[in-house]
Image 1 (cartoon, rainbow, N blue to C red):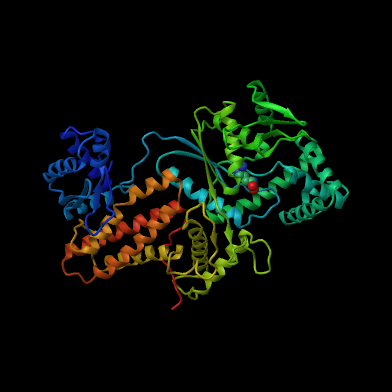
Image 2: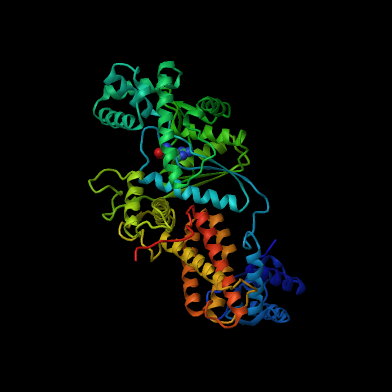
Length: 577
Ligand code: ARG
């Protein structure tokens, strides 16, 4: 296994601690807070001194003296209450870059004990076109899925289709109202069904009787009425087909296309278990579980509503049981709007109370909303909800403006594919560039630009290095052993060396923005490097070869980062002259 530079140094520090008879649990470094003074710093002496009631400066001085024996450190100093500042020799950095370039994982450590992680994201609903809110779940979820897989976990993604609640009865009742029966139901397209749903929605808000009718039909559907079930299967199928197309375009991958309906049978089991464990009670006709907390009251969880229907909560609790029993989930990660936090807190708590997932951990990655420039939920120009297809079309139109005319080398199909990769990449990067929990304003003017913190900027950086590599090959320059000859090469190498720490943190925090942020600064660091360090005009051939290899490594790392973000990296980028 190839160690990242940081882990390599950690190993050296741990060895020094051991030699000195010190507890090596404090033996690790972090990237220096003062890059002008040192590359890394070790604050272990402080923690150690505290726990052993010793003088931190003295300990720091002893560790520093021990490390001095290692020629891989160019400069070591101690300062403040016991910080150790470490600067590395150029030779160590160069050697580590060579090792990392030869390693398929670029020095990124895999988890020591792989887990089975079930990922719940997407969460589309029957009859509703995906809108901008669903974008975030698919985009953030897919990135976390890829990160989990990359660190070595077994990931099973499930779209958890919203296919079972009252909206089903609303649509069926609206079809019956208009057609007199469900005879034609199976001929309806997704557009027709969405229309029925919209009308039903308005009607149920205005008319109590219509609402009651929809409720009765939902209950009958759930109880197995064959006529309703047949029509419902069709609604579900056309809806699934429509969202599959969207997710394909977004490059979001789902192993399972299960829905809330699949948990129906297990809901009955949950109700039974809860009763057996004595945690549920009947309250006003509903079956509920009370969650007491010393000073923070939480609303009770409804398992069965007073009309006999299962709640959204019990559906999720039952789904947990299935994921534990059938999929052997060690961890379940939900990527869902943060406004559903309370729902998930309740669901996790009941799952724990009734003991259906004793060895499974849960995580809700809650994200904020996408807003328009006015700070309100993002809408189309005419005020309608911005659905995902409109957004992708809008982004493509923008990108197309900057594309050249097709020619002999790049035909129309090639350009159209490029437009799609850039347009979708731009949308995704904009969604992944901020902390997931915070909402953001959709920057209609800037998100698809080739400069600034955008997806196309990173794609462009990769394509530029591809072109450098092609030109170097034509000039007969081949990548060779890395050596550090100037400040910019050193900065780039040290930046590349952060990859392991960055991926590890993005994984631990389920936070793709850590990767997008790093990709952006890496691309910038490369730019500075390339402006200062010529490859084609460098007379020293071994230096040109070293720089070419560093460029290639940067390209590969940027590609990996885009891959983990779920964004394509086109080989070439075209631009109107
Ligand atoms: N379909 C739900 C909605 O639109 C989201 C589902 C989230 N996942 C879950 N397991 N509850 O609100």
